[in-house]
Image (cartoon, rainbow over all chains, first blue to last red; front, side):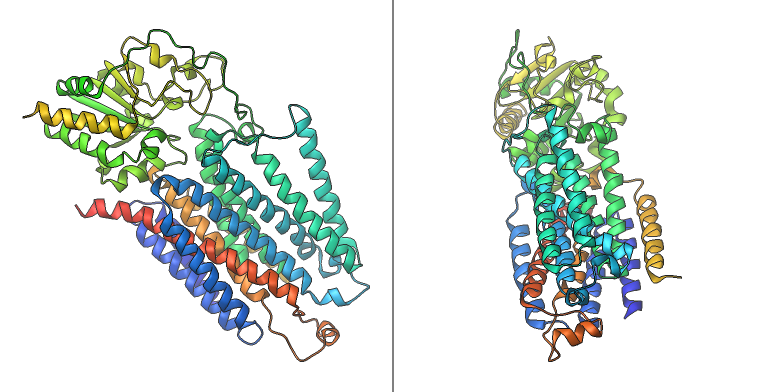
Amino acid sequence: MDYLYLLATVLFVFGIKKLTNIKTCQQGNRLSEFAMLLAIVTTLAVGANYISWYVVISGLLVGGAAGAVIAKKTATTQMPEMVAALNGFGGVASALVAMAALLEHPLMHDPNKSLFDTGFVNAVSTPITILIGMITLTGSFIAYFKLSGKKLVHPVKGSQRHAFHAALGVAVIGLSYWEITTASHAQMTIATVLLAIISGSLGVFLVMPIGGADMPVVVSLLNSYSGIAGAAAGFVINNPLLVVVGALVGTSGLILTQIMCKAMNRSLSNVLLGGMGEEVVAKDAKDYKSIKSTTPEEVAMLLDGAASVIIVPGYGLAVAQAQHVVRELGDLLQKRGCNVRYAIHPVAGRMPGHMNVLLAESDVPYDQLWEMDNINSDFKSTDVVIVVGANDVVNPAAREATGPIAGMPILDVDQARTCVVIKRSLAPGYAGIKNPLFELDNCLMVFLDAKEALEGMVKEMKELSK
Amino acid sequence: MDPIFLTIFVFAIASLLGFELINKVPPTLHTPLMSGSNAISGITLVGAILCALAFKDAAPEVLAAASQPIPSWFGNILAFLAIVFATINVVGGYMVTDRMLGSFKRKEKK
């Protein structure tokens, strides 16, 4: 049986490795699915003589059905929220494992022994699993709500906030110590329940002040946490499979988090402590002069004479479900001999690679998708740039020395001959600041839903080519 | 060597492996990778299954003396919830990942 666990571990490693390459990613996911199945079947065989089959089978059926329904019903735009929610479920499962294992531990019937008597590492793992698991649960659900566009306000204001969080942290440490050292099982139970509650509220309060724009980083970090919670649960029940696989997920999540922070030119601590995380809208955020607005028909005429076009997709594209129309427009342009490319900012949308997934769904050729660093120097020689529902990632204010997004790498769309921005209104993006791009002479605004605007352009382009 | 030290050792090596494993990922695959590794973190299901204990004929005191885990109603309720949540994570996570990767596949066939 141990060999099957070893095999599953090796398959997980290769599965993750293959997931990092576009050619092998699907194979990688299959591999990791198979490894999971192998791990579960092996576990059922290991525990065949002492597990409660009623509980296990009913749990697997209920969870499997619920998981399948959730996955089927999710629209492409909701994927980021979905990953956040699923991640929360994983975290709470680990916390529950630690609590169940504690309750079922033989020492619970020995009035003279505390958890500490089971050995230092096992003892410490229990509160750690509960802490990280509960933070993952509540933090993920706050991220879920924020990504669904709900505004949540932290009850404690300003500088007192850090003190408040620190107090909760101290409470966590105190309760953990109490849980580990007390020989009274009533006290141990109380400590465990309180620890779960305080840890959960810590997750809520820590994620709440972080701005919606930073949620991808938070989800990625919480994904890493759920791995660590799994590894800690592995220490609690002495299961090396959990330890190894949890550690793998934990570190891979950390690396991904780092990549995303780098893309925004900010440190992780800056994101978490809410440097710009506060959802404040600058006073002049809607104060625009000299805006030039236009219609899809006029843009189509502009595109008619263009030899090179770069499309910059943002969250607005996802909201409007306009990925198919944008491809149609791209194809039309390409047929006319125009050089069409898509410029993908690393944090466009609400998750890293969000735009890539969306555009892949509508079969946009992979070689038309360009990363920011590779395309930024080409904007100068581009006739028309179409910004579809993006805002902060094209805001020239980022080049200034100060301001909330100062230093963030942006796409240099303002350098193109003409820049068309499709946006429903002049409302600020997540950063809550004014975008000077919209006031530039070479910038035209189309105040429409992304899908409507693009459909109008496609229609007019077809008229023009008759 | 203390067996617990061996587990810590394995934990440390696995963590280092995780760091090295994914240092280069094209941005296209960031979301699927996050989603895929999120599904893998549902591995805690293994722990949840092992916590759902069948009731034994022996009294709790006897089991405790033999340092065996003691089944209880409350313990099984916790284990049941853990299994449900972990399974949602595993099944939902893999299905969502498959859907994302499926959209890449279609394109490549062309």
